[in-house]
Each structure stands twice: as C-alpha cells, then as structure tokens.
Image (cartoon, rainbow, N blue to C red; front, side):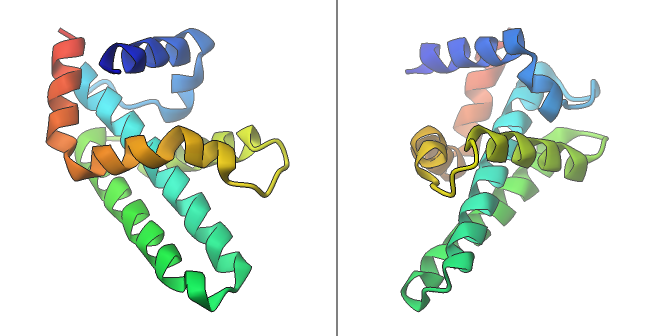
Length: 138
C-alpha cells in the first residue's frame, strides 16, 4: 500500500497537480508531502460537510459536524507543516480541483472512494505519515 501512495504521489507530480498544493521551499520534502495530503483531506472534508449541510436533513447534522471538525483539524495540521505561504489559497486551489473532478455531479462517491479511508488514517496518526514521508524522501 505504501508503494502505491508513492506511485500516486509521483503520478501527481508527473501530471503537474502538485502545483495546486505547492508548499514553500522552506519546508522539507517530507513536510511538503504531508502538508499536501493534509490539504487534500481538508478540502475533501469541507466539500463533504457542505454537501451534507445543504441536504438540510436533521438526521445527518452530526455527520456534517464531524466532517467539519475533521476539516478544521486537517487544515490546522497542514498549517503546522506548510511553512510560509498562502495556506488559504492552496486550500482553495485544492478544493477547486476536487470539485472539478466531480464532473458536475453532486455525488460525493468519487471523493469518498479516494479520500475517506486515507484521510481517516492520516488524522489518526499524522506523525506516522510524516515518518513515512521522511523515509520516502531520503
């Protein structure tokens, strides 16, 4: 699985998609990679929580609140590793890219398939993921 993530990361680089989540040069490569993943998660959680809030379904309120809390946590962690630069602009670019990937659909299925488990794992133990990136970028 770890090698798949490295491959995915390299695919993003080869497609030029990391430009949307560029991280200032002051951060090390591991921190850049982690901050990029955290921005991806923050965008995913924000988009998901907004979609659930738009449903106006009282039974989904708690889910939307948990997603919003996860978005806030992801963004706060991204800020810790991001370094100097415009974190809000990077988040906006990431959100815009994710929304565009939905191809006009209001379904969150594609985003959930891509981010649900990986973001849950990342937020559960961001230090382990940083250690992974430190080893991967040596």
